[in-house]
Length: 105
Image (tube, rainbow, N blue to C red):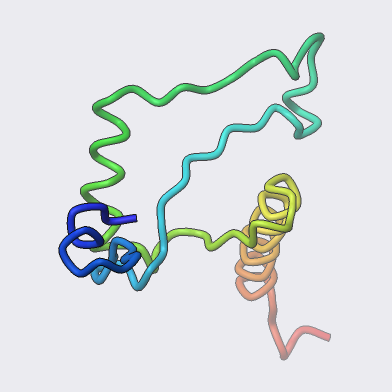
């Protein structure tokens, strides 16, 4: 809530985020993937430094369409695996196109 503007107009008014079309940046950290499985992995956490957080908040309004959009009801590990699968498929496709020869049957 924008308290100053709310008091001024005597109504509840929310902050507007005009640059990024009402989207916000969130930084995710996960140890759920199989290659990161280790004892007590649920105890590990990520706390972004102040510089990193400020850089993300400064660049996000300009480049927000480049980032992955996450549905709040879906696990981040599922989104992560889906994006990895897409990248792997693109690499496989490039390899297949280079090897393809329509005259060699």
